[in-house]
Image (cartoon, rainbow, N blue to C red; front, side, top):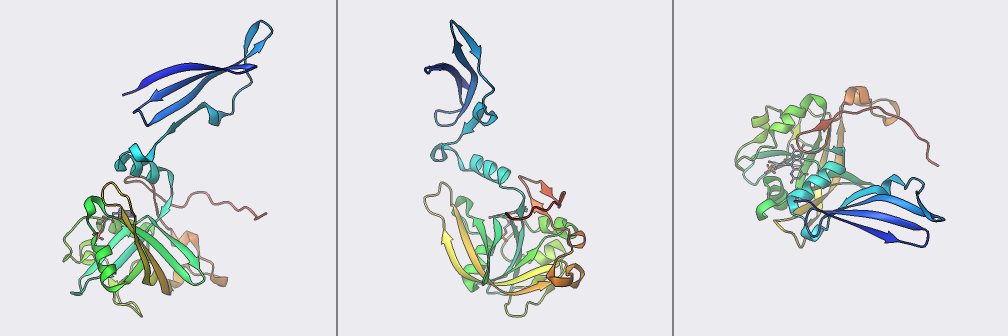
Length: 257
Ligand SMILES: Cc1cc2nc3c(=O)[nH]c(=O)nc-3n(C[C@H](O)[C@H](O)[C@H](O)COP(=O)(O)O)c2cc1C
């Protein structure tokens, strides 16, 4: 429900008319409706105000439910790369699932991070497997495998092999037990070095995994001279909000200052 309150602030030379649109007592949109200035006995329109001052909505995170926060964060922090993470449990069952709270965080030595949310205080199978044996493979997602990646985001019982479910081919890693997805063009074999359960959550929070990359596999078809990657052949896919994804758009260069 929206509730508008308008008021004016008088300064020495200006009157600023402000509207506050309350969504809740804690979440509101602030809008400067008009800035006027005194001109002799008259009041005139001021010069245009910087557009960023006109309108914004502010969210007090302590009073915003986690599903709204999820929409705001995943709608604005875009495009996100997707780590398609394969793990294995102690019974040898392969697990595969996509994570877009994912990125590379260091090259010296190389490390990645990703985060598994724990909605309802429940660990995902990926998290349980990594806590059990500390190993995972990051498979990177391209246009060719995006539908299969999506198939592995279903919530299924822990004893279902998601390689079979999605129809992708498991191939051995060199140093760790979890399998690589043959159809992916890039794989990182990783060992967990840290994990951190986010504190003070509303509904389970998340666990952040940091993994050291032990081996990088890159398909010959995308590797060019001087270790550059052929983007026309690679065709990576990123996640936007909800069920939206993006391909690479227009690429431009800018020299560092
Ligand atoms: C593109 C995409 C990105 C996702 N990113 C995340 C994420 O960053 N963190 C998360 O907890 N779940 C994420 N999910 C949901 C998981 O993939 C989903 O919960 C999956 O079933 C987990 O599988 P598991 O229980 O086998 O680990 C994502 C789903 C999709 C389709």
